[in-house]
Length: 310
Image (tube, rainbow, N blue to C red; front, top):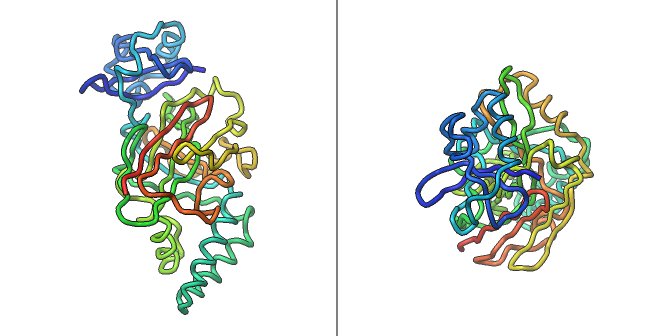
């Protein structure tokens, strides 16, 4: 399976390719330099359709010329026009909402009890709840190996997949490929925000380095049905979650139709699927240990590992 991504070679940014071997890569910036200046996967996606196809064809035939020790992978898209997280999978919501409700009830205040009752309505609507999305702050993106600094809350991970949406030569959105997505969340703040605004997003989802993607993007043409790709989460080397998107209530094409039913795509986007069932510690009634190492993996995509500080 061909994977594409963004990296640094020393201080030099470049686009890279790999064929499933995470020990060596192809320098796309050098291989396809005649097609345009490629300092990231974003630059490749900006190329005309024919040039993109040419670059992919060359990458399939090329021999690796970089070792993993030479490069530092980055967030696959370093300048997406938009990042959204949605709910094509909703199985995770019921146990997560139940944990939130129980925490609110334990607070005992009138405001908290009212917020808990509102969550009961949300629980009853799963999985038929309307398709909603939440925008992510583009300044909060991070990639494989980046240190995630806990700003001082109850930080948790979320195991997701994301699709890379390319604006093609006709100006239409198309699914280019898939990557892993760790949607870091401050659970205590999320509960507070819900009690105040009935929103699940806000600052609990948008803090420095809180939206981690990677390690690379597997082409949509190479991976078969993305809903069947197996994902796994480990904390400090212990497996804490595994599963796939087979319980999705919407397909990726259906999500695309919703996302762009009124708005044109202005550039290349990242869209998260929502969390797989059991794909975070919060819904299991657990908390992430301090200074934990969190490792998300998928055989088709690779390994996305980060350490939390604090």
